[in-house]
Length: 578
Image (cartoon, rainbow, N blue to C red; front, side, top):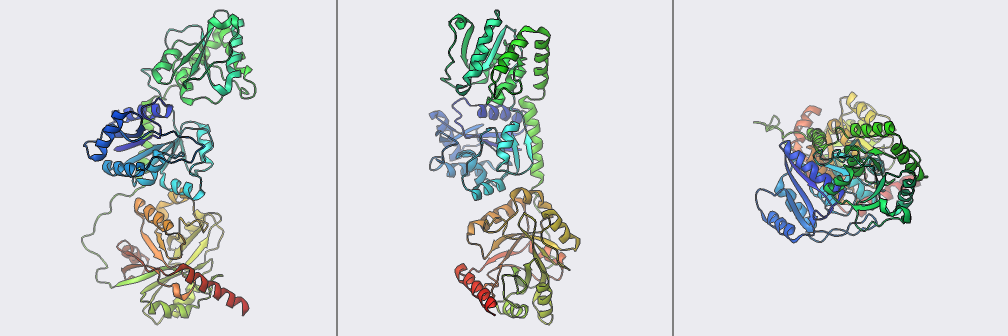
């Protein structure tokens, strides 16, 4: 499997996300996968190697730095440097990856751009517990969610924060550790406190417990430079040390010999896991968020009670089991495989087209009659106009009613025009679904899955209209991905959409998952009929339709949307006057 891991943080600087990426990259390579890490960097030598990779060096190096590092803030909407999008698109095309895995894509960064640019299967890992604010617009977030095949979080809090925006099935993974680096050492009577500028009361309360523990000392462990230290009483100054551990090796040297670890309330999940792997008893009682003194009291109790300390250390070692980078890589491989199975394999080319002797016809798969509340076109007029526009087939898909489709079938009984009876059905809260080749009306307001089941029960075909148009209520990306196997036809061109980018997004989604593509005018006035269609072989039943649509061509014949909408409004006003 060819895998691309994309991190938004400078590879030249220590960062907990980069430690995770480096660890799983090495473990995935051990499993036989080809892994390329794409990242920004501040090192000139990294950027030079990245330029060689972009220019065509083969094979791709394990690390590709494609842009200088820029400050990344969750409170900023500043984007990445100009040219970064072109670079990420170029490296993704060069790599021809099976999986693109982006880390912290809820930032204006390479990770975000990678998910937008790639056509591969995607995964996204979230580790921050802060509320996501990027991308700022709801439509942008939904577009990003549509690009993500697997959602991964490195802690329950990170999952809960991201799940507010990104609905779907979440996988909870460990931050990962290297057991060769993190393991118990020669224990000394030391309490390590995760030092945070915003949590100095926690550190102070632990320091003051030293008066009750004459043989113990405290180490304040900073994971960021210039972390500072709280004020230390003069009589305890010789028993309090400050250490900075920005990378795993430096933190391991501190944690291996410690007996007790006191994590910060808003600390790094990775640091807690590292302390557990080093056999430190963890002092993290319930309620510490409101009363940091509780952590100090528990640390003192652990230090004074040998049996409690021994049990705490054993519990930590057990909690760290199965959390190595090798374990994470094995789990990720399973996630990647599951995502890849959702993409159908390349269809086998037929030696002969079973419908090759049929004539080519234009088929408009989405339109309305006067049976819809917002349309005034009579079925007889629709049939005559469709033929005059050169259409060979139409699908009548009135809103939540089926009578218009039956009336149109009757109106075309003595004509060559093929009429597909259908209905555009409003679901409970997941947009609309069109049923084609129906026999009877399907009620509105049912769940998305039940609506699909009702269509299938009649032997009909499931057609998803305007799936990404934010002007309509549409299914969530997670809903679409759950029902990929149920979708017979995906509308990639709707002639009435205000923003053609929504059609482009639908086309991209259909190509990614190899969905049969449809197009329609969504006409509510006669002048709109045929503005969107598919060129396909003539058919006589749903089975032949499915065979024909796989070789169909999308036909765009747009007219001014303002013109068509004004005609629709005038028709509605005329009906009210009558």
